[in-house]
Image (cartoon, rainbow, N blue to C red; front, side):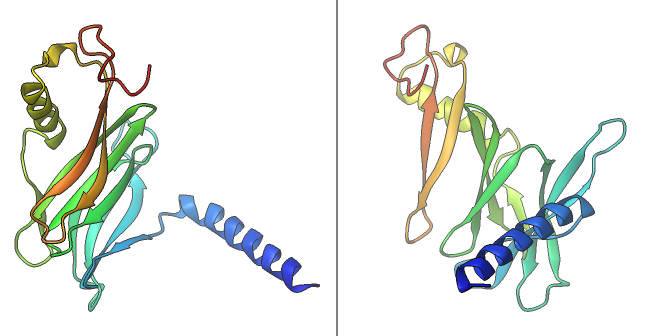
Length: 179
């Protein structure tokens, strides 16, 4: 077997193992914080009855002692969440993909130790779109769909840059990115 064939064989084996391990409620390792003090891990679990399917529980886990872990968020398995940790490790932005042309986010602030709590109970997404519509003098009721995407943290962690994309606003497509 040539070196190229061995590499291809290894890749296929890893893919097969990954596919087989997915439904077995295995921890999925996520992003490690910039300073390496914690990481975010996800675990699948059965959805609450009578809902079918599985949910995902996300945890903030110490890299020094993996037994030290705090819950971050829960979401359906069909909802993909990517986490972006600020440079100072005091903020986490969870970018949520709900489906086609639908994405949002949650902003978490560090409290004690590895505990992170959502910044606003009302919902980061609604507050973000409210702020945008106020500043652009748009009627919020006219907004049909929206996408919020992470762009970057400022180096001092004081600012979060996000990208907002929306559908029609009252029949005007001048602010639209897609049909």
